Length: 57
Image (cartoon, rainbow, N blue to C red; front, side, top):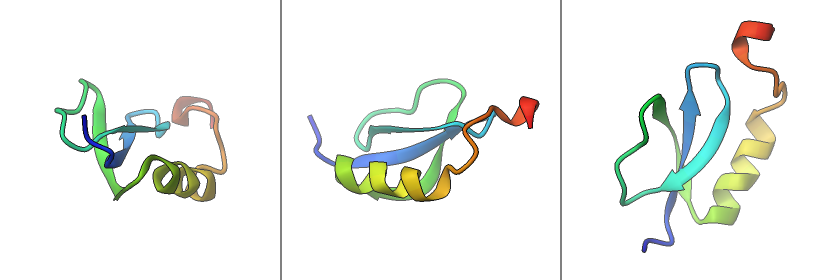
């Protein structure tokens, strides 16, 4: 299992992380940031300031 992760985003602009060496699950796309789990989680913490789904904003 890889120790590298991707930051992923769904159609509702909700963030998560996913293993870099696995296919993305349906409905998710790579956001662009990648790194260790901690690096990806820090990135999400900085960019995901409104946690409401896009359809509720």
